[in-house]
Length: 94
Length: 115
Image 1: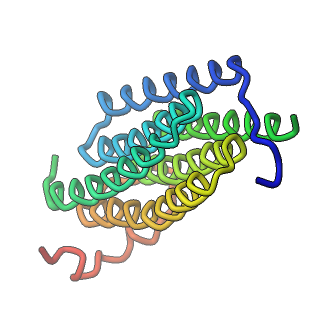
Image 2: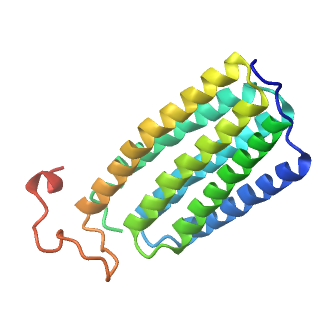
């Protein structure tokens, strides 16, 4: 292409992986603590975005563009499950 | 050399935004602000990481897929957020005590409570 492809040093990759792990932990705390079911759905929606980012980091690390398809499937399933959850929790006063 | 700098900075910035999103989800006082941070920062963080990947492997396949994922995420994140907020408003989810809102005074419209 118009410029030579770059290469991520492993230290950058480590920091990104640690950030993703920390954000997964924080989202789990919200899932456990969430007072109502809807808070848990928000956390699960964010979790699907985090796993999508993790998948792209895998694609970078392993130089396999296959993981981008997985990331797309995760995005689709995350969206559909979020909307399905909202219909499930309709008018449930928990 | 320049594309490694761009790629690594984009990846770091993207994962930092995802971290911000999860911190926001944990710290925000009520449901609506949590929803606000989760969908917005989550979508933006993953878009940045995808752009970072674009600079690492600029083949045609990666360009098409990352644009597809970013477009899909930016189209569907607001819809999901709207669905969640609508259900929360329907269930009259309590707001944060210090947030002024006109919902308290107006009765929810009848279309909200219809099953």
